[in-house]
Length: 264
Length: 255
Image (cartoon, rainbow over all chains, first blue to last red; front, side, top):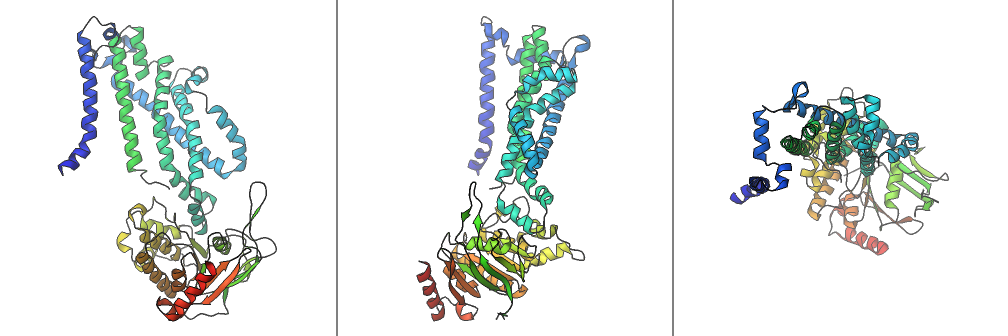
């Protein structure tokens, strides 16, 4: 029993210990004021106390915002973009798998546009949508949609032929087969892809916030740079890292608990 | 004892030739000009070596592959050119949808059919009871043994009240004791429902003890090498002289 408990808690204990060790080394290095790096990378005790003193509000005057506002802005953009990309990728996959005309017309566009990095869309998006949430959502969408669509098509090809034969045999038409057999078959795989691509989406929105938008987690880092405030930069990086980790865990939880089945 | 009306043919295979489309040219299967009759209301088992065309024949009976213009499969006096709802197929694996429970998988059999006036939940429970899976109704396929998975697949097929059940090596992945239990279940379900069943298998014992009629397919082009009536209860006894004689005859032909 004790062995089983250790089995369950070991990843947490080891994981937290490694983080604690990193913070400890960081703090110890920060005690020596003569190292240039500690000026650029102030230890957590310094930048956290600075943020607590300012009541978790970053920025100056009318442009200042609270941490929760920044988090909400970034999460809103990432999740909206990812959700739209998820729906659009599945819809495109359905269209391509059900219609030869759609395959012929959409496939070349898909494979030409997929290699373009989401960051490359930022100038165009700012011109088209202005400096707004739509721009950030668009960047996230472009960063996820193509990879997810290509992955969706691969998942569709993996659906066992028996599943389709059985449903067809039981009276399902093509659309019913898609809805009741293909869709549930591909959902876990496509969701795993979405989770893997979350990092890309996360980075894309941060870059968009750093380059053009005035709020969000990316903007905190940009503000820190403009104010020569290394504490603010480090704080922004820490929040970005922790938020990304938490979201990844939430996505993993959804994948394991809601879309748990495996298609062999 | 199953009373078989030998005159009622459920399938007539007439001059059946199958060619598979390949990328540049079609590839011929061993089924070239095959003729055969399969009777209704009994279990017909088809034996043969790998690649002899028995699974292709089963797919042709199901309407999943269509013969060349010169011939084909007649189901109740009509040429088949597509799968029919009254003919249901069970495969060796991948029969169940992993996201549905046992009850959900069985219920799936009725999803696309008109079932006005039918108490669906009651029908599902009755069918689960027939195959001994009432207690596993809420379980998911990955939680089931191989035998339970195939029993679920059989329940889902039978809930649609098919006229014909086609089985493609359904028990090949099961161990011997489970296999024998499934043979008994299949025979009792056939007697209870009167469904015509055609089962493809590699296993000589399975073919004789389950089937009312055993067909051995072989040669290239394929032809029926053995056509034996195994409807007698003597054939259920694996130590009877008749059983052993037929087993030897079949093994001599196949191996």
